[in-house]
Image (tube, rainbow, N blue to C red; front, side, top):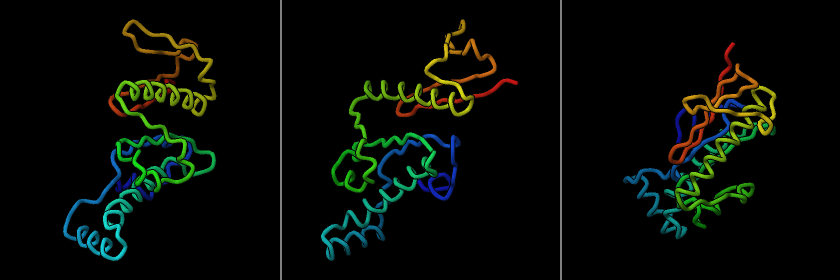
Length: 173
């Protein structure tokens, strides 16, 4: 988190449709953070929150905010870390994240990412080519790669591995 894509960049429309955030972005432990922690522990009784949790979740919210920049934008935010399910982190999330789905095992994650990849495909077909992704026929070539027999000019790939899903499109002219 942080850096050029973590904050300060506006990629509207279909230029950015998802982000995977691994961990709550806690600052590194060091003398400065520990001084802040000690100070806020003495003055407010919540040193870890002020020194680590609040700055980290601010980075998470900034990175997630890259996906939705205008009222018409759509996208997916994957929060990848068990801590995001803990009440101390959930209370820092915006109210419109209340539908957050928690996944606890790799098999369920694999199913969700596969569904996420196909949802990205459907969104991409509609946004890039004006096609209804639900009604497109998909076949596989001799090597097992999917293709669109009714639209040979459109190439695509859906991939998911570990904690990530991606869908890419290209047009042959």
